[in-house]
Image: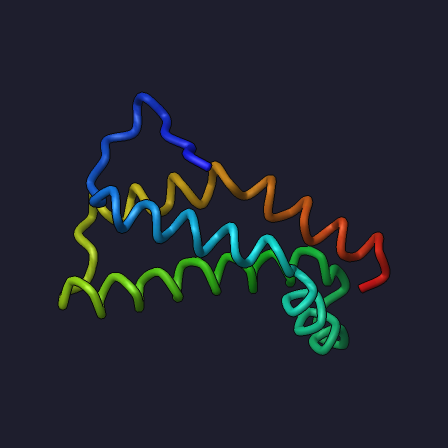
Length: 107
């Protein structure tokens, strides 16, 4: 799926952008692992859906930062990090829905 917003200044290469989308898509296929981790933290949090969402965001941003560093040999520039943030924010509703659906399914 391509989620390009016209007003987004593109700093990432198309290959890196595609990698980020794929990472998000792969995690959307199985949100249960994030729900399970959130459930394990239940004594520390009342809302495990929000905790699972935070874990999801952490996986995406941390995973992509590692992929970026490994492939580019450097950290992201501010424009690159801003594009990652924009993409993650645009996909956040999908992420929350996947987590909520997993909760509804009892997973």
